[in-house]
Amino acid sequence: MELGAIARRLEVVQAVAPLAIRGEVLLERLYRAHAPAAVRFAIMLTGERELSEDLVQEAFIRVAAKLDTLREPDAFGAYLTRAVANLAKSHFRHQQVVARHQRSVDLTTLVEDPIDVAASDSMLVALRRLPVQQRAALVLRYYNDASHEEISQVLGIPVGTVKSQLSRGLARLRREYRDA
Amino acid sequence: MRDVIEERLAARLRDLGEVTPAELSPPADLRARVGRRKHRTRAITRGLVLGIAAAIIVAFTSVVVLQGSTGRPRVDVSSRLQAPNVHDALPAGTVLLAARGRDVIALDDGGHTLATMIHAGRGAIQYAQVTADHRWLWYLSRKGTDGACADVVRADIDGRSSKIITRASAFAISPDGARLALFGAGDLANNRCVAKPTAAEPARVVVEQLDGGQSAALAATNVTALRWSPDGAYLVTVRCSGARCLSLERMDVPRDLRLSLVRNHGFAEVPAGQSFVTFGVDGLYVLQSSPSGQAVDRYDPGTLEFAGVRVATDRHWSVSQVAPTAGATFVVATRAPGRPGLYVVGADGRLHLVRPIDPGILTPVFPLPAAG
Image (spheres, each protein chain N blue to C red):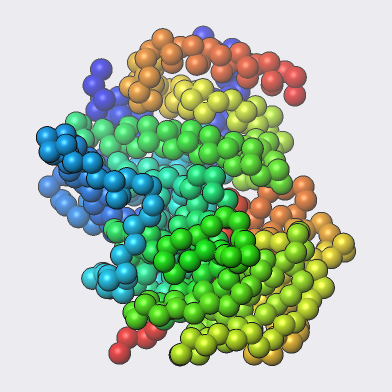
C-alpha cells in the first residue's frame, strides 16, 4: 500500500492544501491541518503538552523544508508522524545523556512522570516506561488502528520489527500493569 | 481479537486523544523558520560538494594546508562588526533566550518556543546573549574536554552564519555590541586561552573594543559571572572560592578602556554558578542561598548596596536562575520532589508555573528600541 493511501487511513492526514499554493498560506494550512493530530500523537509518546508542541513545531519545520522534494507530498501527515517519533526518540536519548551528567536531575522524573498526564493512570504510566519506538507502534496500532504494514511505512522500520516491537511492548505493558 | 489489556490501552489512548487540542495556531515565525531550515540544508549540501571538490584539488596538487587543519578556531577581526542584512528574526514579544544543549531557543512570556535561533552541529552552548539592536547573537560553545576554555561565537541573528571570535572561560558582549568582555587565562584578545592560569599567564578580565582592536586587561581570579550594565559603562563580576561566591564587584570601563575596580561588596553565601547575577530594569538581581531557603536579592547597580528582596523561597524550593525582563521576572526553580520549571514572579511575590523546562541558561532579550 502506498504512503498516501496509508496516510488517508490514519487520522493524522486530512485535506492537504494544493501544492500550487506556495508560501505562508500553504504552510499555515498544512500546520492547521496536521499539527493537532501530530501533537496528540506526541502527547501519547511523551505525556507532556509543552514538549509535544515543541517537538511538533520542529518536526513540521523539518518536513516542510523538504516539501518540494518529498516523494509523496500528499502524505505530509505520515512524514510528520515519522519525524515526531524520531524527534521524541532523540529527545529521550538526549535526556538520558543529560541525566548521566547532572546528578541533580532524576531521569525517572523526566521520562516517566510527566506532569500533564494523570500520574494515577497506571496504564499510561506503564506505556510511558516503554522505549519510544514501542510506544509509537502501540499508539499507531491502538489509537490510529493502523495495520502492521502501515506502521512499518510510517515509522520506517521493517514489518517484522513492528510485530516484535508490538509483541514486546504489550508483554511489558501486561507485566507492569498487573504489577501496578 | 483484543484482550483486556489491549482494550484498556485503546480506551486510555482514546481518552487522552479527546483532551488534547483540536486546533493549533501556527507559530508566528513559521515561514521564517522553514526558510532557515531550507537554507541550512542547502548550505550543508553546498559544503559537502565544496568539501569533496577541495579534497580532489588537494589530492591533485599535493598541497598540505597546515593552517586551518590545526583545529584552532578561525578569527576574522576585519569583519567583526559587519552587520547582517536581516535582523528581524526575533519575533515581537520575545522575552527570553534559552541556551540548552546544542540549541539557542527564543521563548515568549508563556514559555512557548517562538524560534530556534541557533542549532550547533556539535558542542554544547552554555550562554547566549543578543545585542540591543537585535542584530547579533553571541554564545559560548564548549567542545571537547578543555574544561576552562570555550569558543566565543558571534552569529547573525538569523543564524545563517556564525564565526568564532575568540576563546575564553566566560564572556559578555556590551549592549551596543561594540565591546567584548572576556574572562580567562592566556592572550584572550588574540584567540589564545589556557585552561590553567599560571604566574606568567594569570586569569584576567579583558575588554576588547571590537571596531578598533584595542584591548585592556585587569587581573581577576575566580570570576564566574560577568555582566555589562545596561548602559555599557561598567561590568559587574562575581568572584567565587570553591563552591561559594563571596564578592560582587564593579569594574568601570571608560571609553579609553582604563579599567578600574571601584567596588567590592561582600555578601553572605551564594552557590557557585554562572547565571545567578543579572541586571533587571530596577537593579541588579543576585541569587543567594541559605540553609532555610533561597532569595533573589535586588542590589543598587551603582553602589552595589542591598536594595530589597525580590523573591524568597523556603527550603523546599531550589532556584537556579533569575531572568528579569522588561515585563516580568522569571526564575528557573525546582520544588522538591519535582523537575525544573520556568516560573514567573507574581505581584504577590509568589511563583507561578509557566512551563516545565529543560536545564539551560536563560538570558533576557533587550526590548528592540522604537523605530526612528
